[in-house]
Length: 491
Image 1: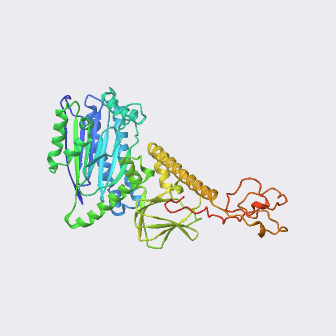
Image 2: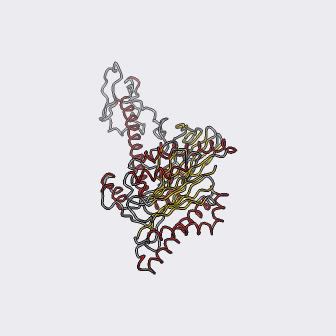
Image 3: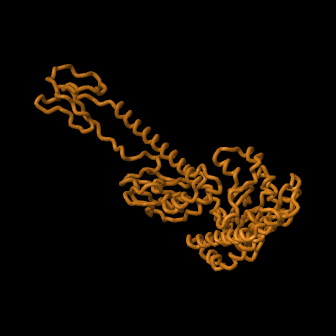
């Protein structure tokens, strides 16, 4: 698989100069859009310097990029490449800040930045400000960036609706920019690319006129990639063109010799995301947040009969079944069979208690695995995502508590309604200690002398008062309450 790209920037209808800058460098598959600010050409200087700096820094550290291409599945290689992009943006930030500090005419200049680096079938995004990265896959559009703006923050806090944000006089106020301070926090995201994916990097001069993202999805489905940037610019200009407009479009294309392999990989990528979306624990996550969760997972395969987790052993993994079946058992008792799309072991993410059951592969199985340490690292970095996951955990535990209470109530009702026959009075030895012996019954009061009575014609319900000699019963067998019925999930 390879990517092809096209891009263009335009001054728009209202401005007299263009402060946007774009970069397309197919030699390292690096694509950048910057939207400068500061006035008197300072914004143009900031955006151009940011574009050149990130290109230079990544080029100087190409060995890290090559290592990722060879060992992209290794966490260390991912972290190094992510760190490289963060460093490149911060080098640009520091240099632009220094330029603004040295020249009073450039005071306050800065720029937004969104970039995408393609390597080894993966995309790596770095983002500061309100320029955006969109992905269109199978006709569905997903925004992979989150605006660092005042109105976006107000929407997240529930202080403003999206319609109010569009009408707000503060809609162009951003909360992060490259060059305003010496350093800046950079959002990064690593994601899979499959043939047919189309990506759009753009400034707010374009996405500000796309109130319905599906309009962008329809336009980006055009097969003539070279003409697409101009079409998008014309759309923005026809709707006002009040700002500079920039668009860079990237499309993934399958290589003929790798078509079968790429189709298999695409199927795997879609399966992972679709499975995550259906799990209650992740029900409130956006597409971008699901991708972040997917990035901390790894794939494990198990042959039939292989234990995955063992009862009473410590563990720190959540497992999600992608293919095959697994069996949950406690002791020698099989409890339930789990199928693809089901998860187990989630309590290991929040406590260190021993496993409460054994899980064994019934068929050859493939599972996604999330480790506790990686999970904690993610939620420390993503507080909004952490709140969503916490809320989902509460709901899952609440549901399981209700199910357990219902099961216990059912067992209690069954015990109370069970008919227990009385013994015939003639069969009782008057010298025998007739107090109840079963630990499952309450201790009776001291029996009074028996009074001969006719034997009852039919079994009668058990009374709740003191048990007399005429009410001696045969205790029922204990019911094994420690085993969950089939259909309930582990833990």
